[in-house]
Length: 314
Image (cartoon, rainbow, N blue to C red; front, side, top):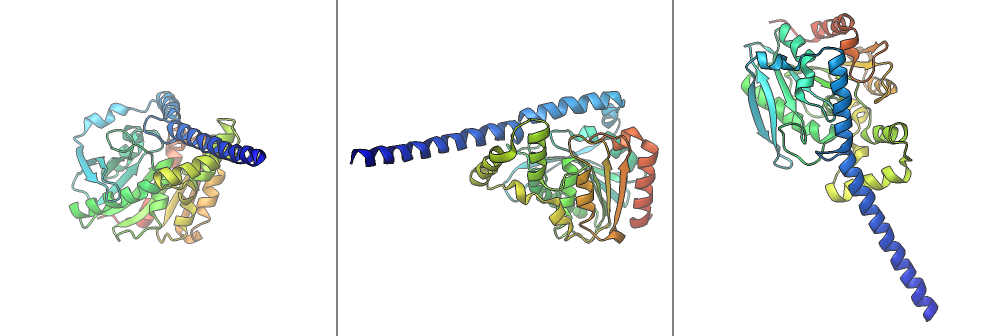
């Protein structure tokens, strides 16, 4: 009887230890990787700020124009999201989506390009970023639904808009994930710059290459925690699977020296859609999100070739 009691207590103790470890690993990983004030987010911001400085990207450019601040309330969870809209009375619109831990202002070069090409602009602030509400970043999967609402709002403003969706990094994965949804006919084309194919696989890569941690069991436990605590599955955030349902043309861009989202991702993404609907540009020597700054002329040539093919001049 004594032995049985010891065995039962040992099993109960082991279960409790596992539960405690599960909660600790899950909550710590969440705070580091996906929370609004995540450690990883601060590191990305610091790295991006250095790159922006190196390439002399003018964040004050936004202040030269009277952007209208728009808000919407998400249908899924009632969050207030913010977007920055500039209308010059054009019939073409670029919806621009920033990356993980970034800020809409860091999309300055892209907004400037489209504005100079006579597009109206909507630069969104993703959930848990900037002025938008939210405690957890959506890794593109939650953001894809937010993007659908932004699209609907823009179509309400101008039913004749021809819309191009343009995303960078996590924003690129967002537009790719949105591509598999039921988009209005106003959306004509998609531009994906340095997006990841699957959020779970991207975390696995970052765990190994940046954090020097084993993906198993830490990432597995983290994903279990997300599923139980937030009803969110990193594996479900799959841009490749969504692109297989995409009927729109997509321009895929990636730097061949990307150390954050390896260039292999672009081949997974682009292979998901038919050859006649895809255009791929690999920027030589470009690190993560630096394909445009490193060679502006080549980048803009790719944009011009793609956009002229799929958006009509009115």
